[in-house]
Image (cartoon, rainbow, N blue to C red; front, side, top):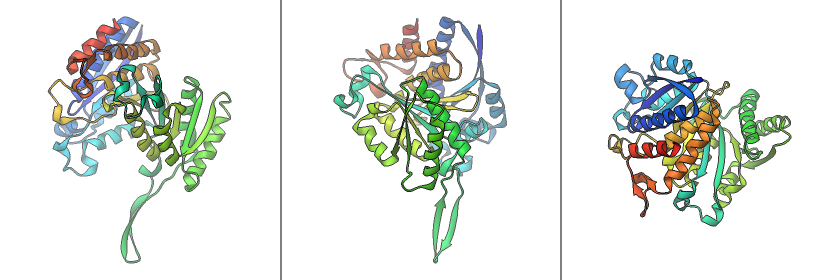
Length: 357
Protein backbone atom coordinates (compact mmCIF):
# COMPACT_ATOMS: atom_id res chain seq x y z
CA UNK A 1 0.00 0.00 0.00
CA UNK A 2 1.40 3.39 -1.02
CA UNK A 3 1.66 6.04 1.69
CA UNK A 4 1.53 9.72 0.72
CA UNK A 5 2.58 12.51 3.08
CA UNK A 6 0.45 15.64 2.67
CA UNK A 7 1.02 18.98 4.39
CA UNK A 8 -2.21 20.92 4.93
CA UNK A 9 -2.18 24.74 4.88
CA UNK A 10 -5.74 25.78 5.67
CA UNK A 11 -5.02 29.51 5.44
CA UNK A 12 -7.57 32.25 6.02
CA UNK A 13 -11.22 33.08 5.40
CA UNK A 14 -13.03 30.12 3.85
CA UNK A 15 -9.75 28.19 3.64
CA UNK A 16 -10.40 25.88 6.62
CA UNK A 17 -13.92 25.05 5.40
CA UNK A 18 -13.02 24.14 1.83
CA UNK A 19 -9.88 22.23 2.84
CA UNK A 20 -11.94 20.17 5.30
CA UNK A 21 -14.17 18.99 2.45
CA UNK A 22 -11.22 18.30 0.16
CA UNK A 23 -9.56 16.17 2.85
CA UNK A 24 -12.86 14.33 3.31
CA UNK A 25 -12.85 13.44 -0.40
CA UNK A 26 -9.16 12.51 -0.32
CA UNK A 27 -9.82 10.12 2.57
CA UNK A 28 -12.65 8.49 0.60
CA UNK A 29 -10.30 7.98 -2.34
CA UNK A 30 -7.60 6.52 -0.13
CA UNK A 31 -10.03 3.93 1.24
CA UNK A 32 -11.46 3.03 -2.17
CA UNK A 33 -8.19 2.93 -4.12
CA UNK A 34 -6.05 1.33 -1.42
CA UNK A 35 -3.49 3.96 -0.49
CA UNK A 36 -2.73 5.71 2.76
CA UNK A 37 -2.47 9.41 3.60
CA UNK A 38 -0.36 10.84 6.42
CA UNK A 39 -1.30 14.44 7.22
CA UNK A 40 0.64 17.25 8.79
CA UNK A 41 -0.61 20.81 9.29
CA UNK A 42 1.17 24.15 9.21
CA UNK A 43 0.36 27.87 9.16
CA UNK A 44 0.54 30.18 6.17
CA UNK A 45 -0.83 33.66 5.56
CA UNK A 46 -2.87 35.75 7.98
CA UNK A 47 -3.31 32.94 10.49
CA UNK A 48 0.49 32.61 10.62
CA UNK A 49 0.87 36.37 11.16
CA UNK A 50 -1.54 36.22 14.09
CA UNK A 51 0.13 33.19 15.65
CA UNK A 52 3.80 33.71 14.78
CA UNK A 53 4.21 37.30 13.59
CA UNK A 54 5.20 36.26 10.06
CA UNK A 55 3.20 35.02 7.04
CA UNK A 56 5.63 32.16 6.44
CA UNK A 57 7.18 30.58 9.56
CA UNK A 58 10.29 28.44 9.10
CA UNK A 59 8.37 25.50 10.61
CA UNK A 60 5.93 25.69 7.68
CA UNK A 61 8.76 25.59 5.14
CA UNK A 62 10.30 22.59 6.91
CA UNK A 63 7.02 20.66 7.03
CA UNK A 64 6.23 21.38 3.38
CA UNK A 65 9.67 20.21 2.27
CA UNK A 66 9.17 16.90 4.06
CA UNK A 67 5.80 16.30 2.40
CA UNK A 68 5.08 14.61 -0.93
CA UNK A 69 2.63 17.39 -1.69
CA UNK A 70 0.95 20.44 -0.15
CA UNK A 71 -2.75 21.35 -0.12
CA UNK A 72 -3.57 25.03 0.43
CA UNK A 73 -6.92 26.69 1.07
CA UNK A 74 -6.63 30.45 0.57
CA UNK A 75 -4.77 33.35 2.18
CA UNK A 76 -5.44 36.99 2.91
CA UNK A 77 -8.20 39.28 4.08
CA UNK A 78 -8.89 42.91 5.02
CA UNK A 79 -7.63 42.31 8.55
CA UNK A 80 -4.05 42.39 7.25
CA UNK A 81 -4.40 44.85 4.35
CA UNK A 82 -2.61 47.70 6.13
CA UNK A 83 0.59 45.74 6.70
CA UNK A 84 3.63 46.45 4.46
CA UNK A 85 3.70 44.32 1.31
CA UNK A 86 6.45 41.99 2.51
CA UNK A 87 4.55 41.30 5.74
CA UNK A 88 1.11 40.61 4.27
CA UNK A 89 -0.40 37.11 3.91
CA UNK A 90 0.28 37.04 0.16
CA UNK A 91 4.00 37.34 0.87
CA UNK A 92 3.77 33.97 2.55
CA UNK A 93 2.37 32.43 -0.63
CA UNK A 94 5.17 33.89 -2.75
CA UNK A 95 7.67 32.76 -0.15
CA UNK A 96 6.55 29.13 -0.05
CA UNK A 97 6.62 28.97 -3.87
CA UNK A 98 10.23 30.11 -3.77
CA UNK A 99 11.20 27.86 -0.87
CA UNK A 100 9.82 24.79 -2.64
CA UNK A 101 11.19 25.75 -6.07
CA UNK A 102 7.73 25.77 -7.65
CA UNK A 103 8.47 27.04 -11.15
CA UNK A 104 5.59 25.49 -13.15
CA UNK A 105 2.01 26.63 -12.64
CA UNK A 106 -0.73 24.45 -14.16
CA UNK A 107 -4.12 26.07 -14.62
CA UNK A 108 -6.77 23.92 -16.30
CA UNK A 109 -9.84 25.54 -17.84
CA UNK A 110 -12.53 22.89 -17.94
CA UNK A 111 -16.28 23.19 -18.45
CA UNK A 112 -18.32 20.54 -16.71
CA UNK A 113 -21.36 19.63 -18.81
CA UNK A 114 -23.95 20.68 -16.16
CA UNK A 115 -22.38 24.16 -15.96
CA UNK A 116 -22.16 24.94 -19.67
CA UNK A 117 -24.92 27.52 -19.32
CA UNK A 118 -22.81 29.53 -16.87
CA UNK A 119 -20.08 30.24 -19.42
CA UNK A 120 -20.18 33.74 -20.94
CA UNK A 121 -19.12 32.18 -24.25
CA UNK A 122 -21.86 30.94 -26.58
CA UNK A 123 -22.68 27.23 -26.77
CA UNK A 124 -21.83 27.07 -30.45
CA UNK A 125 -18.29 28.24 -29.63
CA UNK A 126 -17.80 25.94 -26.64
CA UNK A 127 -19.28 22.91 -28.37
CA UNK A 128 -19.70 19.71 -26.38
CA UNK A 129 -16.88 20.44 -23.94
CA UNK A 130 -13.79 22.49 -23.20
CA UNK A 131 -10.56 21.23 -21.65
CA UNK A 132 -7.37 23.24 -22.00
CA UNK A 133 -4.32 23.69 -19.80
CA UNK A 134 -2.26 26.85 -19.25
CA UNK A 135 1.34 26.09 -18.28
CA UNK A 136 2.79 29.27 -16.78
CA UNK A 137 6.40 29.90 -15.76
CA UNK A 138 6.16 30.99 -12.13
CA UNK A 139 9.52 32.11 -10.76
CA UNK A 140 11.07 34.28 -13.48
CA UNK A 141 10.25 37.12 -15.83
CA UNK A 142 9.18 40.65 -15.06
CA UNK A 143 7.89 39.84 -11.58
CA UNK A 144 11.39 38.82 -10.48
CA UNK A 145 13.59 41.00 -12.70
CA UNK A 146 15.47 44.13 -11.78
CA UNK A 147 13.17 46.98 -10.82
CA UNK A 148 13.32 50.42 -9.32
CA UNK A 149 12.76 54.13 -9.71
CA UNK A 150 15.05 56.88 -10.94
CA UNK A 151 14.97 60.51 -11.98
CA UNK A 152 15.17 61.20 -15.70
CA UNK A 153 14.90 64.68 -17.21
CA UNK A 154 13.79 66.03 -13.88
CA UNK A 155 10.95 63.60 -13.21
CA UNK A 156 10.56 60.22 -11.56
CA UNK A 157 10.22 57.14 -13.73
CA UNK A 158 9.82 53.49 -12.75
CA UNK A 159 11.10 50.39 -14.52
CA UNK A 160 10.62 46.61 -14.34
CA UNK A 161 12.79 44.21 -16.29
CA UNK A 162 11.58 41.12 -18.17
CA UNK A 163 14.41 38.59 -18.15
CA UNK A 164 14.79 34.86 -18.67
CA UNK A 165 17.68 32.43 -18.85
CA UNK A 166 17.67 29.64 -21.42
CA UNK A 167 17.62 27.07 -18.61
CA UNK A 168 14.47 28.62 -17.12
CA UNK A 169 12.68 28.50 -20.46
CA UNK A 170 13.81 24.94 -21.18
CA UNK A 171 12.48 23.50 -17.93
CA UNK A 172 9.01 25.08 -18.25
CA UNK A 173 8.83 24.12 -21.94
CA UNK A 174 9.60 20.52 -20.99
CA UNK A 175 6.69 20.54 -18.54
CA UNK A 176 4.35 21.76 -21.29
CA UNK A 177 5.52 19.20 -23.86
CA UNK A 178 5.35 16.35 -21.34
CA UNK A 179 1.82 17.48 -20.49
CA UNK A 180 0.87 17.59 -24.16
CA UNK A 181 2.11 14.01 -24.66
CA UNK A 182 -0.50 12.90 -22.11
CA UNK A 183 -3.24 15.01 -23.70
CA UNK A 184 -3.83 15.90 -27.37
CA UNK A 185 -0.18 16.47 -28.38
CA UNK A 186 -0.47 20.16 -29.19
CA UNK A 187 1.43 23.08 -27.63
CA UNK A 188 0.75 26.75 -28.32
CA UNK A 189 3.69 28.85 -27.14
CA UNK A 190 2.68 32.43 -26.37
CA UNK A 191 5.11 35.35 -26.54
CA UNK A 192 5.59 38.88 -27.91
CA UNK A 193 8.57 38.08 -30.10
CA UNK A 194 7.79 40.89 -32.53
CA UNK A 195 8.71 43.41 -29.83
CA UNK A 196 10.50 41.87 -26.83
CA UNK A 197 14.00 40.40 -26.85
CA UNK A 198 13.11 38.12 -23.94
CA UNK A 199 10.28 36.73 -26.07
CA UNK A 200 12.65 36.11 -28.98
CA UNK A 201 14.86 34.01 -26.72
CA UNK A 202 11.72 32.30 -25.41
CA UNK A 203 10.61 31.33 -28.92
CA UNK A 204 14.08 30.15 -30.00
CA UNK A 205 14.41 27.98 -26.90
CA UNK A 206 10.94 26.46 -27.17
CA UNK A 207 11.67 25.51 -30.79
CA UNK A 208 14.83 23.71 -29.64
CA UNK A 209 12.97 21.82 -26.90
CA UNK A 210 10.27 20.83 -29.41
CA UNK A 211 12.86 18.81 -31.38
CA UNK A 212 12.77 16.25 -28.57
CA UNK A 213 9.00 15.85 -29.00
CA UNK A 214 8.41 15.11 -32.71
CA UNK A 215 4.89 13.85 -32.00
CA UNK A 216 3.76 17.18 -30.56
CA UNK A 217 2.42 19.91 -32.84
CA UNK A 218 3.94 23.29 -31.90
CA UNK A 219 2.61 26.66 -32.94
CA UNK A 220 3.33 30.20 -31.79
CA UNK A 221 0.98 33.08 -31.07
CA UNK A 222 1.55 36.62 -29.88
CA UNK A 223 -0.07 37.25 -26.52
CA UNK A 224 -2.58 39.81 -27.82
CA UNK A 225 -3.80 37.41 -30.50
CA UNK A 226 -4.02 34.61 -27.93
CA UNK A 227 -6.28 36.73 -25.73
CA UNK A 228 -8.58 37.24 -28.69
CA UNK A 229 -8.48 33.59 -29.78
CA UNK A 230 -9.38 32.35 -26.30
CA UNK A 231 -12.74 34.06 -26.64
CA UNK A 232 -13.17 33.50 -30.37
CA UNK A 233 -12.27 29.80 -30.51
CA UNK A 234 -10.99 28.32 -27.22
CA UNK A 235 -11.34 24.74 -28.49
CA UNK A 236 -8.31 25.24 -30.76
CA UNK A 237 -6.05 25.06 -27.69
CA UNK A 238 -4.73 22.06 -25.81
CA UNK A 239 -1.66 23.19 -23.84
CA UNK A 240 -0.80 26.89 -23.70
CA UNK A 241 2.83 27.53 -22.72
CA UNK A 242 3.81 31.03 -21.65
CA UNK A 243 5.86 33.23 -19.35
CA UNK A 244 4.97 34.57 -15.94
CA UNK A 245 3.14 37.81 -16.71
CA UNK A 246 1.37 36.58 -19.85
CA UNK A 247 0.35 33.40 -18.04
CA UNK A 248 -0.99 35.41 -15.11
CA UNK A 249 -3.34 37.27 -17.44
CA UNK A 250 -4.29 34.52 -19.89
CA UNK A 251 -5.03 31.93 -17.22
CA UNK A 252 -7.55 34.28 -15.61
CA UNK A 253 -9.17 34.88 -18.98
CA UNK A 254 -9.31 31.16 -19.69
CA UNK A 255 -10.77 30.49 -16.26
CA UNK A 256 -13.72 32.78 -16.85
CA UNK A 257 -14.69 30.83 -19.97
CA UNK A 258 -15.59 28.00 -17.61
CA UNK A 259 -18.24 30.19 -16.00
CA UNK A 260 -17.27 30.07 -12.33
CA UNK A 261 -14.07 30.85 -10.47
CA UNK A 262 -15.37 28.58 -7.70
CA UNK A 263 -14.73 25.54 -9.88
CA UNK A 264 -11.10 26.09 -10.85
CA UNK A 265 -8.13 24.23 -9.46
CA UNK A 266 -4.41 24.88 -9.87
CA UNK A 267 -1.07 23.21 -9.30
CA UNK A 268 2.45 24.57 -8.86
CA UNK A 269 5.20 21.99 -9.39
CA UNK A 270 8.94 21.80 -8.81
CA UNK A 271 11.56 19.77 -10.67
CA UNK A 272 10.69 16.64 -8.70
CA UNK A 273 6.95 16.98 -9.41
CA UNK A 274 6.20 17.69 -5.78
CA UNK A 275 3.65 20.44 -5.76
CA UNK A 276 1.40 22.90 -4.03
CA UNK A 277 -2.27 22.56 -4.94
CA UNK A 278 -4.88 25.26 -4.38
CA UNK A 279 -8.10 26.74 -5.76
CA UNK A 280 -7.59 29.91 -7.78
CA UNK A 281 -10.24 31.89 -5.89
CA UNK A 282 -9.53 34.04 -2.85
CA UNK A 283 -10.26 33.65 0.84
CA UNK A 284 -13.75 35.27 0.63
CA UNK A 285 -13.74 36.52 4.25
CA UNK A 286 -17.26 37.93 3.81
CA UNK A 287 -18.73 34.40 3.74
CA UNK A 288 -16.22 32.65 6.01
CA UNK A 289 -17.77 30.48 8.71
CA UNK A 290 -21.19 30.35 7.05
CA UNK A 291 -20.81 26.91 5.44
CA UNK A 292 -21.83 28.27 2.03
CA UNK A 293 -18.46 28.35 0.23
CA UNK A 294 -17.95 26.21 -2.86
CA UNK A 295 -15.36 23.48 -2.06
CA UNK A 296 -15.24 22.02 -5.57
CA UNK A 297 -12.16 23.95 -6.76
CA UNK A 298 -10.25 22.61 -3.76
CA UNK A 299 -11.63 19.11 -4.30
CA UNK A 300 -10.55 19.31 -7.95
CA UNK A 301 -7.12 20.51 -6.76
CA UNK A 302 -6.90 17.22 -4.86
CA UNK A 303 -7.62 15.42 -8.13
CA UNK A 304 -4.70 17.29 -9.73
CA UNK A 305 -2.50 16.34 -6.78
CA UNK A 306 -3.37 12.69 -7.18
CA UNK A 307 -2.62 12.82 -10.90
CA UNK A 308 0.54 14.94 -11.09
CA UNK A 309 2.34 14.35 -7.77
CA UNK A 310 1.07 11.12 -6.23
CA UNK A 311 0.68 8.88 -9.30
CA UNK A 312 -2.90 7.95 -8.41
CA UNK A 313 -4.54 8.71 -11.75
CA UNK A 314 -7.46 6.36 -11.28
CA UNK A 315 -8.49 8.18 -8.11
CA UNK A 316 -8.05 11.54 -9.86
CA UNK A 317 -10.37 10.49 -12.68
CA UNK A 318 -12.91 9.23 -10.15
CA UNK A 319 -13.04 12.59 -8.35
CA UNK A 320 -13.61 14.50 -11.59
CA UNK A 321 -16.34 12.07 -12.65
CA UNK A 322 -17.97 12.33 -9.23
CA UNK A 323 -17.99 16.15 -9.38
CA UNK A 324 -19.60 16.05 -12.82
CA UNK A 325 -22.25 13.64 -11.54
CA UNK A 326 -23.04 15.70 -8.45
CA UNK A 327 -23.36 18.95 -10.41
CA UNK A 328 -26.28 17.62 -12.44
CA UNK A 329 -28.65 18.29 -9.54
CA UNK A 330 -26.69 20.03 -6.77
CA UNK A 331 -25.10 23.47 -6.45
CA UNK A 332 -23.58 25.68 -3.79
CA UNK A 333 -25.01 29.24 -3.70
CA UNK A 334 -22.36 30.71 -6.03
CA UNK A 335 -23.37 28.41 -8.92
CA UNK A 336 -26.99 27.81 -8.00
CA UNK A 337 -29.59 27.78 -10.76
CA UNK A 338 -33.34 27.30 -10.50
CA UNK A 339 -34.32 23.66 -10.59
CA UNK A 340 -31.22 22.39 -8.78
CA UNK A 341 -30.71 21.62 -5.08
CA UNK A 342 -29.00 24.38 -3.10
CA UNK A 343 -26.46 22.70 -0.82
CA UNK A 344 -23.94 23.83 1.77
CA UNK A 345 -20.16 23.51 1.63
CA UNK A 346 -20.15 20.41 3.84
CA UNK A 347 -23.10 18.86 1.99
CA UNK A 348 -21.25 19.24 -1.30
CA UNK A 349 -18.27 17.38 0.16
CA UNK A 350 -20.58 14.62 1.36
CA UNK A 351 -22.24 14.35 -2.06
CA UNK A 352 -18.89 13.97 -3.85
CA UNK A 353 -17.89 11.24 -1.39
CA UNK A 354 -21.19 9.48 -1.96
CA UNK A 355 -20.71 9.67 -5.73
CA UNK A 356 -17.22 8.21 -5.33
CA UNK A 357 -18.55 5.21 -3.45
